[in-house]
Structure formats: C-alpha cells, structure tokens
Image 1 (cartoon, helix red, strand yellow):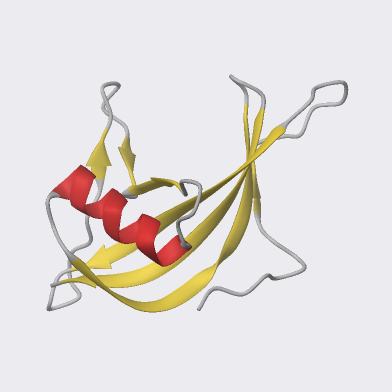
Image 2 (spheres, one colour):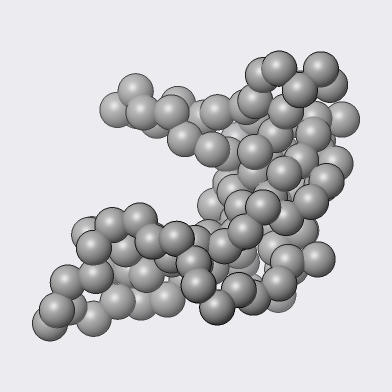
Length: 107
C-alpha cells in the first residue's frame, strides 16, 4: 500500500556531528463521515498532533496505524489511501523518523 518515494518533505534540521537513529512511524489524517472534521491528539503541552506513532517490529504500517489510532482515540478506522512520506529529525533523543502519512476514515 505505501510506496517509497525518492524525494520527501523534511521537518526539523539534520545537525552535523549528531548520530540519528532511524525509526519508522505512521500517522493518519482521519476524517469523519462527512469529511468536515479530522482527529487530533492533544499532548500534555497542549499541542495538537495527528494520531499515530512508531511501527513496532513485525508490524506493517497499516497494522501500526490501526493499533495507534485505536490506542490514542478509541476509534477503529478504514484506510483510504496513502498521502506520502516525510522525514523528521527529532532533537532528543537523536532520531530520524520516516513518517508515513495516510488518509483514513473513522468507521
């Protein structure tokens, strides 16, 4: 379902001299049935993020997205289509994340 693209959007800055650990994550843009509202998750710092997270060993991105959205929102989803991939550089700890962005709907 999710393909590897050569050029990806990048979030954050890759700093010279830092070792980045690679991790894969998947996040969903999950709309309601009328496609007027999408789900977000509020952090303890009052930031709003897309629901999703790390792909665990042995999981496909699709399995991880179902698990993460159920854990974070309590909703089951139907995956509609991949949106794309991006790179994210996280300052602490040193990580480079490959983010799968997926369109999905709440079922």
